[in-house]
Image: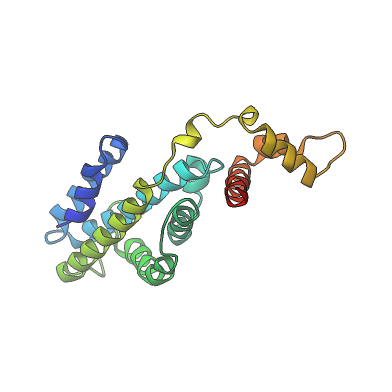
Length: 211
């Protein structure tokens, strides 16, 4: 079963209640890992994919549902992990060690998945219950590790972030990038808010070090 994912979602329900949605997919993985292995595997892929999208959209202002939907599965997973690392504490090596498994999961889903692509009958290849059980447990560990790190990130600063809230930073940024007739800081805030936020965090860390 998938106790790690269920527990981490339940433990953070008060602050991230929308992630309770993924319990539906977890249930589908658990119920099918013996009787319908390929449905369970396909659902495992969907769970990691969905969690990765949710994390990216919340951590990166420039990312929208449209942009994350355009990414393939391995790219989406890598970007979500790197985003967690940029905003919190996360083992970057985890991305590299998990990449092969993520790629293989995508290949199995594409070649044997029963739902998303549809499948002519009889199927030429079917996954075993042993492989689906293994993938279920690995998925549980991956999702738990991602969510545990993500849920620790303080996102309150994103709620009320406004351009006028950081005049000293804006002045510093405009001084570093002196463009005649244009406020570089305002243009960056409007056109690339993710980079603006990253530069702001670096600026705050520098000020703290100097103090």
